[in-house]
Image (cartoon, rainbow, N blue to C red; front, side, top):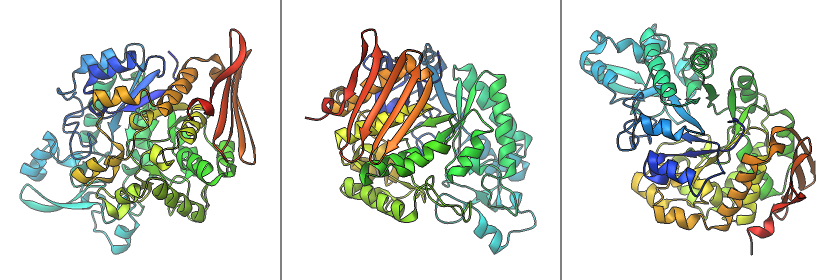
Length: 492
């Protein structure tokens, strides 16, 4: 098994009902397309306040989805990635419920962050204004702990209570999580929200030196147990480059907006600039369970004076094009229009972001598959899903537009969709062709591009034009080089 092949990103319940159903799907209709799967949170409750990213028990499998035996079975013959939610736990977790009841008398009290834990001498207005948060407002929630009113640190939502990685209680907890996952067959650990863990007075409390130390400690634990680590951080592109030098894998979050910009503005230069400097040890994505990141290509307050990969006016134009292409549905799901506010992303399926243009959509996926790294494909994107406005209306959570619950009938129908068939053809080539284990070359000339892989006599090439969305994939085989996929295969 190699780690370079494509991986599916999915919730077990929203694609296949449960873990056994997911395994059946991967071994059946999706066979040959994926070498691995990023299994989004399956801990109880998988359907909590933040779709499983608020675990009450991070060491267990929600019995409604299956068991650890099902996870181990899923790992048979493929890589399984799972999330280590480093920054927080559910406010309804057993440990925090004990702190609510007993306050400082609880043995778990040091594990949880309050305002006073970071600012024991008190916080000034300047201190609080400096704190970086991905949503508007301050990251604190008033709670009663042991009869005393406290300001508890809640970076994301009041249902997710931040933990204090300066304490042995926090490390006892995190070690138990890493042990549970790796003994359950998980060999890749995704560190969720790790950038927010290093809270220190006098800083913006994001990506501090303490964050680096905590990350190194978890990476060491993972390596001792035979696992690799993927660090999840949204921020200025130079931060990703720096982080990549210290860990196994980072996300290439800049790729999705750069590909969208190329295909909607007919401009390949920003993407070409990124290809020159991006880290190779990356996981590539177009879409994920979160929105389409914008901060990853723009200037950032975290790096004052440093330009982004896209100029601000180009970012503004891209966001407007996404809203237009989606018929305005993404505007209803983004920013102040929906709860669970995010300052750095647009909530939209990638298919809707490209106006459901099958040709350009498959081209976007092919660019991702040819760029170096481990390609991950989100389940909604794989099935060419549109924005789920009914789910948004039911929950009011913006990111739910891209978190559809597929019925078995919907999955069967989607597998016949031209854009889905085109993606699967590209995925199967990426998963099996020897060329992708070799050397990568690329060239851009105006609106035309060429991405190529060569390993000995094996060669795979993608040529395309972002002006009209045309493309062709050539690959060597037993009978010489031939066209594997072209834009005519996915459009009438």
